[in-house]
Length: 478
Image (cartoon, rainbow, N blue to C red; front, top):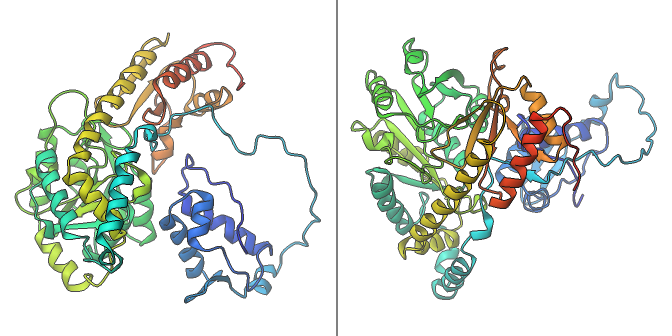
């Protein structure tokens, strides 16, 4: 088949790959996709659905693992012969009845406070196009060959220098692995570490990492947060030996882990062999007040911190270029067992990025983005402070989102629903929690501001004020 349509909602707690997997599975079970049907190619379907090929690959591989789909080398993915089994005991299908569309199947907001959006209007298209054109013209055939599995040495060298001066991360280019997104690097890291480990993750936290761990059958300990981030005391029971954390701007709660808490975490990791900290420094480039706090890796002197960073926030999510810094002991394991894995990032993209950083364009772009995002942050904070009821602002000093603790008597569900009815999409914190939010706690709403203009921030904030604090919430009228 050429293509099929499925509505994927990034705002749902269920990951995108799981939503796609469940949709295809239901279609096969219902007989809409019959035995032998060829599924769309990963490249075409990913482009059509506007998702990453990694997301699509995860969905297809889950279907293969469960026997719904068969992967045929050099041909693609085909529906397996499961029709007879699936229909045992099934009800006789009801004849299809076409119902009129209500126009409410897919919610398209006027304003979307997505925490994953960035400002695409200021991407340096002219510079990037120039570098890409020159790369193709002058590099000729060499970049069409497979490069170093860890990424091209020149790019890793520039990343090493950048990390040292911007984040205090002292590493050699040999320690760096360049990969297509944080998730792909994380899955490689799980293979390097081995499955005989127990992980502790922040709760609430980054849901994709949690899902990856659970899909590998790994034991996961949920770490509650206080106003300083991870509660290190929760690690005293010895259940976990690896901690995944976002200390520079905790996702999604927004707090910055202070130095004393970082020191206690480093003390914990050094108390026993086999312990590691995975530091996800996903948006550390954007800090708006106070001096930059050193990375955990920069404070580590014993090689127990694994550093992961990404260029999705400062440049573009679609570049799919992230990097991981391995301590010496883990680097030896990687080179012994996994060096045969090819790099997941195009060498042409790597070379363009190398020149973009080396020739000073990245630093200029980053300084420009800091100014733009600071103005947007200030605009949103000023607008929220005009709200009539007590509203606490959390995590506004760093990153590309902030949180509101709203105490006007409405629940999180009611706040999200009223905003939606008014044409504004906001995100409740419960969507990032791995267990139910305690009853009676004040609702917390997450607002990402990077993807909205300053004017849109003002307009959306006025709508939220009316929707949340007036007796009759406004309706969505374009």
